[in-house]
Image 1 (cartoon, rainbow, N blue to C red):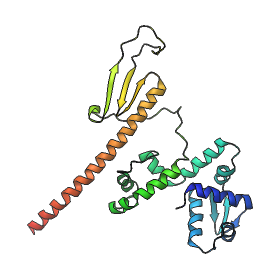
Image 2 (image 1 turned 135 degrees about the vertical axis):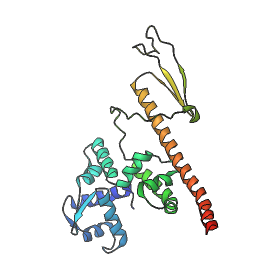
Image 3 (image 1 turned 180 degrees about the vertical axis):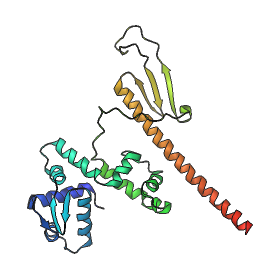
Image 4 (image 1 turned 90 degrees about the vertical axis):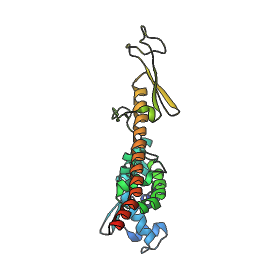
Length: 247
């Protein structure tokens, strides 16, 4: 699969030459200097359609609104929105983003890939790194989540002390607000996860805590899945030995 960055250059070239006109495979091959029958051209066209940069039916193709806005948007915001839509047109990228965020853990990504795609474990272990690199390269065009949206509160682990998350301390109830104490009479709480710490003094810092806990939960869930897989693999030889002894 071709990466979005290179396909944007190809889309720009097509649009500069043909605009929004319907064109044939031969026209595209001529622009790219490829044979119309080549497999590479077929893959490139398929990938452009997957990202929503190109539309086509019955051998006729044209640049889409996403393709136009991503390459010749009237503003940086319009281009960024089009690029975000292009990435989200790839179903696999959407599912990886939901489960792993922008930077999947390299050591356990193959576990997530098994769950998302349903492929077998050996195949996932073989393909995981290349899929991860391709995803990260394309996912950089995703827009940040709207900060004004109320974040979903993640489940907090029952024993945060076992995960590196801990409440450092609760400040005494302030009697009068100061430059370092928020008004309203609540007690700021300082959280620390690993080497990262933050004191909750307003909604922005609270949202940051939610993000930290959400990432922690994802890591714990992935590790639990990996432990279950290893446990199943360890039990499999024992089950085979029991079957052989009974026979």
